[in-house]
Image (cartoon, rainbow, N blue to C red):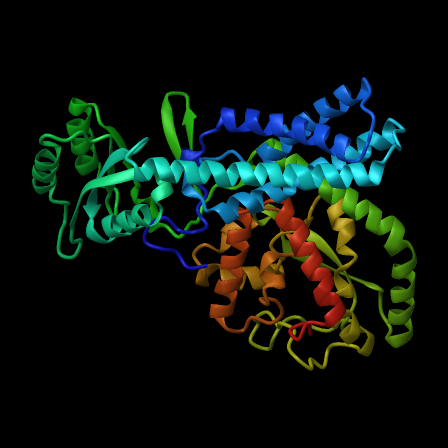
Length: 473
């Protein structure tokens, strides 16, 4: 979760996402070739309907590759990262093929053909990825397709960027020069010294790209260097000073004619991703309430009634999206009318061996079964299956002044489970440091959301429910 001075590992560079159409077309050709080879290996007779199936496979590849960002600028990622991005696309191909054959009632060699297709496709695409990368690195070693790069700015930033380029020859850059100034004791960057260095470096050499890496954004410094580069026709890139903020994701977009950099951008700001997450919430919560809650809730309710007097459900006001109050449903786990306010007026958090908790309530908390009624909140739209856990209003009011970025976790709907919880940050948070860590994990989730991450969190939550969580009390 730590932030590096330059190029954090969790940063998604929206600016550098170049869509590579030749790579996409090559993979679509491999989809077609793999289909034909799989049919040949399994003695499956091709028919006219196969043209429709292959077209569907191509469309499936197009949409899944967009979701997984398979065709981002691949020279700045490792080979294993490419393979990891490929796996969801292979799964999509498997599902599309199975569904297509089922609805078309084509049962000839279905199992062997499907397995053969996925294996052939995985092998050919992986081989293409590996060969492309090796060929590019070979060309770069021979000086082909390389671009001459110069880096200037604050010394630590320059050193970090230079090391990154040197460690990754597949980027295709040759460093002509790098010059940095020390930040300590300086009010402004040394502009004239930087320009002198650039003039000396440019003598008799061709500079293709210039990277400006200041520790903080200084408009006059960056503007003057861009002006120098424009006169020589050099492409300029710079690492803006927003790296001084503790965010792991930024995006660049045009607002009319104005370029805007968004700090702490999240995929869920796009309507398509928000709608997909909401569809997942609706389907998941509806299936749970019909298939599980219909018989499990009455059993839990009966146990609560037998164990102690009072209502079955406990409804508590908590902060939801944008800090709005929402009524969160839970099974009652404490004695009826147990106080949540300490003698000093502060919020009384649940502690280990808390005397307010009933016997049945203790079991429900250890297994997280007490949270299940919140699927009602999900269905009604005030919560999500996965998201930052909501805190009681009084708890949030006490925490807000102590953690500057606390409200960022409320940019999304709260969840029944969350990234912080499956990483061990749940339960009592008497120490402010523990709450900061929980907030950090929540913010990371917001900035790096994906549907696959939601599935991962749901699976890890189910696993924790089975094995038990030591912090569940």
